Structures are given as structure tokens and as C-alpha cells.
Length: 138
Image (cartoon, rainbow, N blue to C red; front, side, top):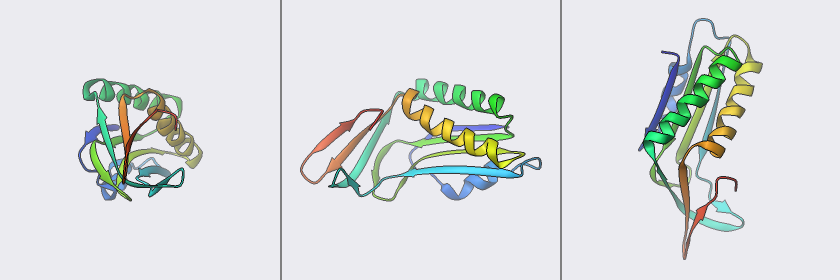
């Protein structure tokens, strides 16, 4: 299996290295997005993520296929959490493994940037006294 695509309640960041490991890979690159404590000087209590799962998985699968082909990757991982997430919780993981580091670095950037632009996953920021839906391009 050269790709793992998932929508999950909780992300296990410890598994990613094993999922991306491949005998022909000299480079493994992983990006983990997490809940930060402040947005525009306002303290974040939590984030809530929801998705149209069928469509999200389909779009994530297309991203993985594009990256696998364009950068000649050995493996790709794309995982996004849904539900309420606290500060410092991991919410998204993208990873790539390839023969050389430049390909996996470039692929990771493509995967996270394009995921945020095209995959139907919606985020709501929860503050102490209000909540705000966040557009795809904060």
C-alpha cells in the first residue's frame, strides 16, 4: 500500500514514521498541524472540525495520487481529525517518503497547502465568549 488516507477522531502522530517507511526511501518528511493557543491576539479554547467525509476522502485520495506521480514518491499519508480539539492537539498530518529529501519536502508542502484549499473540512474556532467559522484561507 503506497498511500494512507483517513478522516479520524484522534490522530496518532507516533505511527506516521512506520506508515511512511520504505526500503527505497532516503527521505521521509511529515507535517503535523495542531491547535494553537492564540489567533489574532485572542485566546483559543478549542477548535471544532467537521467534514463531508465521502467527498473529503475522495479529494484527499486525488491529492495523494497527484503527489505520488509528480514527485515519484514511495508512500504518502494524509490524515485529518474531526470533532472538538484542544490546544496542542494534532489535527492534520501529511507525509511523504521518497528516494531523496527534496521530493518529499516539496510534496508535503503541496499536500498541506492543497488540502486546505480543496478538501471539504470546516473549522470553527472557539474562544471564551464567542465562536467563529474560519474560511479555508485564514
